[in-house]
Length: 504
Image (tube, rainbow, N blue to C red; front, top):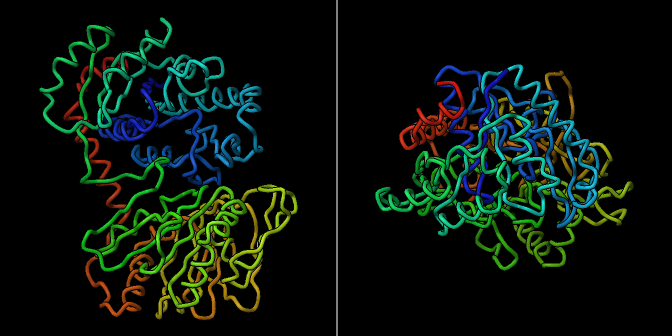
């Protein structure tokens, strides 16, 4: 049976996911068969496995760091928020139903059974399991319904490493406070502490580290520097930022929808030379942007209502009619059509809503979600001015089907779904070729496609196309995992960590 180690945090976004990825890569480099595990993940960034199951994006990243294919056992429970107090509950990759927080907490035994089954299978198949907790184990109001922190550590017989983020300040208080709120059994599971995201000389922390070790009786295994020279996909950080080149020539605006999901779709765009990507709020102007993207959303109808109520819908329509490139991905694609029908009231009490009307298309939401890894080919040269022949790779996560009218043309043909040969039309574009959409997540991770998209924008703006070497997204991610592993090795007591795991 596999050895286990678990990262828990003093709070959310302290770096548990990144450190789990780092340790997965380190253990692989050291010759172990390793798998990631997060029993329950609440996130809107998700991924589809080869078998068509939906899991949290972070576990797919960790699996990639471990050099293995992701499976649903690595994240048996995924919660995708639909409103402030409700989520879609996904068990072993399949959507079960929407539940309020209270309903979920009152009936979480089915989730516990899924966790136990997945953990058992992983422990039988691998030598090491790197487990990630969620939030903080010190949420005393959730102790009795915990499915992701100390209860999982006990189930997995996993020693716990407590991770704290020093960047916002208060790191010592957060660590000591966490220990104070845990009971004796829970405190005894913590075997090490990691201070993450430090800027400066570690010597400045010497007295603080000594105090922590004295007060907790637990060693500080290391201090991880803040890094920004390489990047891994975010788990669920709110995209309220600007990315890309400061000396930009193209400005791409992504509409920051209230229920935005899978915004990692656009990480690769900022790797292209001279490109800036901005996540736009209602107060941001669309006047100067060279392309507008409507991203995926967990609540398409609710976010379409938001666009109308905020006045953003009117601005998007105005810009598209003037020739600005407009792209919709998944829910964003559905929004571009004439109407969205919800006969089963999956997302709303409304049975229908008017779309932006920029594509001749209607969408009907269904009760069953479509989730597949796919391969596809572009059907037309119109959106690039030249034929694109490479096979596209990506994945589908959508609730509903779209039917095209005569005013729209199909964008791509899916030729493989989860290893099955198919011929399915997906996506659409308008007569001008400046408005297009698709259900295909990850389309911009296709290097040639992304470059042609950027070059079309450049030509439309009167700029010369880029002729430099393509940015290889997969190779860059591999390079990032290797750099991360080196950084963590250099700043952690790896010998002590292996002793805690129980292998050296």
